Structures are given as structure tokens and as C-alpha cells.
Image 1: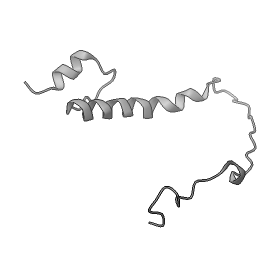
Image 2: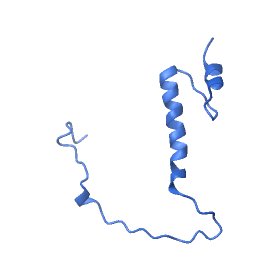
Image 3: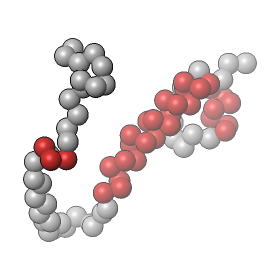
Image 4: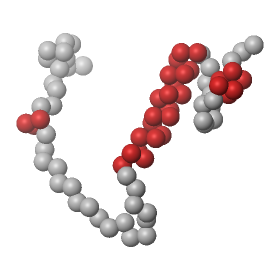
Amino acid sequence: MTSDTWDSYPILRFSEVPAVEVELLPGHENPPLGVGETAQGPTAAAIGNALCDALGVRVRTLPLTEQQILAAMPD
């Protein structure tokens, strides 16, 4: 650990960010998709973890329904 306060924590500044070049490539036979799909997995996992943290039960199948949550809870 090199920093013990937020004042000495090395935060990257915008002036220090390297230049990024974006190149769009043809999708060939792949259907066009947006970038929002990349958040679906982590978002579902975060909601499941929040549910477990709040209620103490782990539901391992999606969608997280009221019935599944109640079934996972001890009697």
C-alpha cells in the first residue's frame, strides 16, 4: 500500500489519459448490436448479490421473482 489518505491517492487526471483511437470494423455475418449488452451479466449479478446481502438468501436462477425469493427463504 502506497497511499494511506485520499489526498495522496494517485488519481489519473484527464490530461494523463492516453489518446484512444476508435476503429469501426465490419461485422461480417454477425448481427449489429449495441454496447449495452456488456452490462447485462454484471448487472444481474450485482442485483442478485444485493438481494443476498439484504435478505440473506441466494437465488441462483433468473429472473429474480417474488416466488423464487420466498422459496429460497427458510421457513
